[in-house]
Image (cartoon, rainbow, N blue to C red; front, side, top):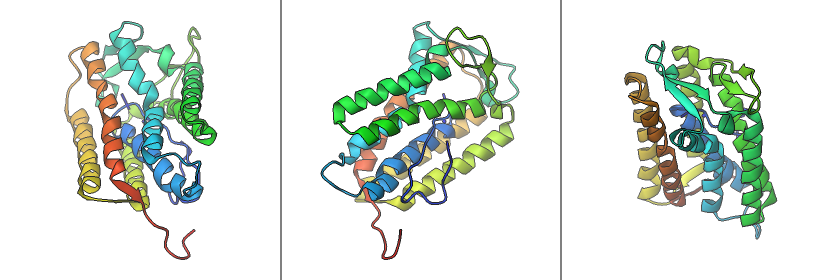
Length: 262
């Protein structure tokens, strides 16, 4: 379920590449930074001209792109096309799901294929070429961060036997530290580059943050899912987060540049 070139210090005037992680706060990182990319830095960099898309039409695709692979794999697991197993003896909660066979969503080749398809669909729908390139890169970049976090269970292509993964998840402490820092950085970037238009923009956003923190804590404190199907079904909640993000984002706006600010 978690989810970059990492230039967090200042996003204004820069183009960022955001990845999704496979579970927990990693997912939030992708969402928060994708929001920042398309609303904060993106809005400032492009300004508002006749070719700029409505905010909601940029936010939803950006978040969906960063999370696309993790939105699809639960469906393929429930259909019996991909396979995960429960590892009750895993030494930490990040390893409770053992990804056995998921080349159609999490091989490098298929991540590229999904990214190209998503970008082409976005371009056909909007005519926005630069945005198409960004969302395509977001899809592919998800695989990169999964390569950092996963144990060696990622294939380079379907049918290609070698598995890769640097295994950050094998250390729960390191995972929490890295994901926690990135989560805070993403929140800070988004909060700094946007401001609420109304109460919905405030409480919708912070309610979303609270939900993510509680969900992450439940992963750390809880046991393994009772079955792979239950684990996959619970991962489908990612589909519900996209309209939630789009809703509170419609109630926020880019923070005005201060005089002399780049």
